[in-house]
Length: 384
Ligand SMILES: Nc1nc2c(ncn2[C@@H]2O[C@H](COP(=O)(O)OP(=O)(O)O)[C@@H](O)[C@H]2O)c(=O)[nH]1
Ligand SMILES: [Mg+2]
Image: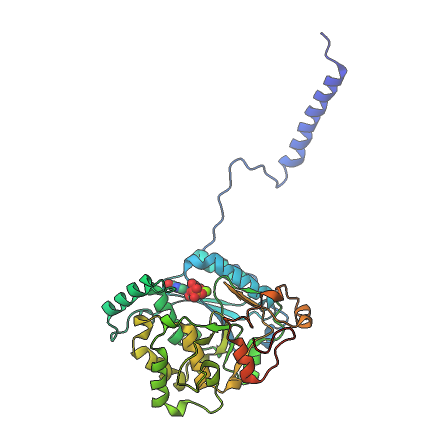
């Protein structure tokens, strides 16, 4: 049977095509992979040595400051999210350094990924044992029983030993770490946070130029069960060190009766921009050591948020604490979103103002407004 002309033509095309392909590509650099190529996995040192640095527009206007993050290797993905948001909204213009601290060694995966995301220089430090362990005056058996009891009562992190070391470290030691010693200001960043607006003004510079020592975006009430004896310890400290307590401090933010009792208000310390020199001052050192001597970080579950907030409120003048209204921020489960629409548009914010926590019942920010004589945004009742 004769082969139809059509099929002969197809066969010819196929043969010519094959030879064309062979001649075109056999002498070129394109090669057809025959087996899956080995994945390239550089070491951290190799990666760091070849990282391309692109200076940001404001990188020559930096003050002496760093970001600082306490994290575990397992926090890698959650902290990466936080770094992206800080870089996109602020640091790509400035390239501030970033210090990572950990009670274990950071692994290469953590260091490579975070270094690839940070536009400034990254440093990785291990926390010395004496800053993440029991001081010799603490009765560890008593501490264990306290944890069990708080666990039974379902107090948040009540049963956790590592959370207590973390809170004590953030309260008294991160600013003494060798990697932190050459800086004047810090911005604390935790995993899983989000910024919703461009950061228009450099917060470090704002603090420096206005002699401010501490700042916040969200404030709220602490669970009293975690700090039953904190306030009596603070009162003892105040009695013993009247020279550290300036007139015009923010005592009225944290107490309704000029210091007799604590109202549990605190600045939420997962966000902080602050002065390291203040945390390293004699005033703060005496304060922390008075607290630490009682063992309350272990026998109760004192958080670094009330510890820092009480210090700022009694050791500083009220004006030295700054409320960053323009920094729109989320740390689970609360959001700060500026109420002023013009500000939100100017700073390209993408938060929903209805999510703003500032004037809800569980926030203390209304108290901060009252203390400063500020008018609340339109739509918010003065009684809120
Ligand atoms: N290296 C290390 N970091 C910790 C540990 N526990 C908590 N952190 C860090 O301490 C900070 C506060 O912990 P987080 O789990 O966010 O507590 P929360 O915000 O109070 O719920 C975060 O930056 C954590 O990554 C720990 O055991 N080791
Ligand atoms: Mg957190």
